Image (tube, rainbow, N blue to C red; front, side):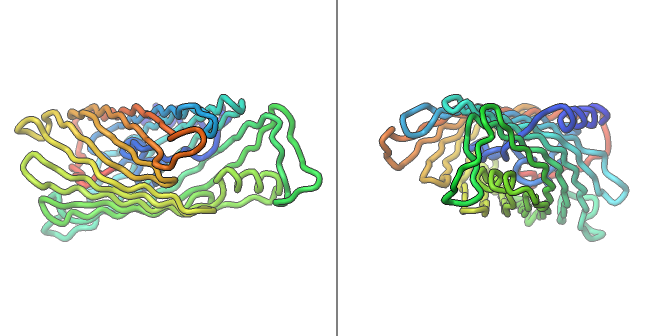
Length: 332
C-alpha cells in the first residue's frame, strides 16, 4: 500500500494537472473517473487501468490525443466484511492544432460497507454501499486564448501565450451494489464533481467553459448470466453540467473454457452523445483485459464523419493470499 500513497503524493504535488478526463468508449477501464466510490471495488489487491484515445484530424474537428492511467488498491476485509480502497489517476489531452494541453490528477479514497443478514454475511449474496471522496487538480494551458467575463466581452482579456488556468476540486460519490440472484447483479453510482466553487472570475469563466465546474454523474451497470458461458453486460452513464452528456450500450461476453478463470472474449455496441456510435471488443483472462474501440460520428459535417480509436488495458494483481471476499458485481 505504501507505493500507492507514494504515487498519490507525487501526482498531487509535482504534476501540473487538468481538464476533467473525457468520457472514453472503453467505459470499463476508467472506474475512478466515473465515481470515486468505485475505488477498490474489484477482486484482487491492486488494479491498473490505462487508455489511449486518438481523434482523427479533419477540417472541422481538430485532432487530439488523450491518455488516462489509474492505480487503485483494496484492503483486506474487516471482521464484518467491510473494506476500503485508495487510488490515483492521471489524465492528459494534447490538442496539437491549437497547441493546448490539458492534464488532470486526483487522489481517491472509498469505504465499502457490507449490508447483509446473518444468512448472507459470509456468502456472495447481499448488498454493498460505498462512499468515496476525491481531491483533484486541473490545469488548462492556453495559447493566446482570450478569456471573457461576459458572453459579449468588451474588451477581451487574454492570458497570452503559455497562460494557464488551474483549479483545485473536491469530488464525492456513493455506490450501491446488489446481487439479485446467481444470474443477475448490478452496481449503481452517483457522484458530484467540483463541489467546491471559486471566487476568481477568470478561473470560474474558464472552468465553466471547459466543463470543469460542478457536474452530476450517474452510472449503472448490470451483469446478466444468460447462459452457462454467455453473459450480457449493459451499462449507462449520464453527466449533467451545462448540457447533458450520456453513453449507453452493452458488452456481450463469451467464456471460452469451463472455468471462471478461462479466457473470455467480448464485443459491444455503444451510443454516445453528439450522435456517435462506438464498437468495442477485446479479450480477458484472470489478470489482464485488453480492448479496442472505434467511434464514428453519425452526423456528417464539412469535415466528414469524425472517427476516433482507443486501446485500453486492465491488470489486476492478487498479491499475497488474504481475506478478500469475491465481489461478483464489480461492473467497472
